[in-house]
Image 1: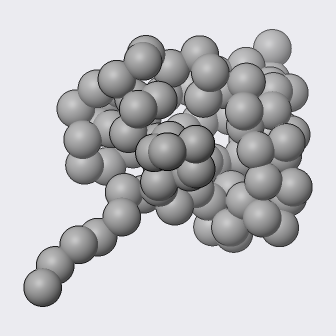
Image 2: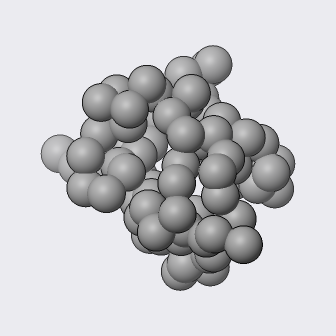
Length: 85
């Protein structure tokens, strides 16, 4: 079966591991819905996406947002917001 992979940093890495492989094709929304609730709470805040999500180093908006279809060999990066001050 064709596969793609997702990479995580920060708290998502603690929950999901550094990297995961999954079967394609799949929408980004379906991929995230398969994550544990704790990970989904970090990704979604108040009904909005709270992390930066990239597909092959490009923002998901270029692929249709959560409706983006992930294909074989794609790499999805989940990057938490950076705070400071």
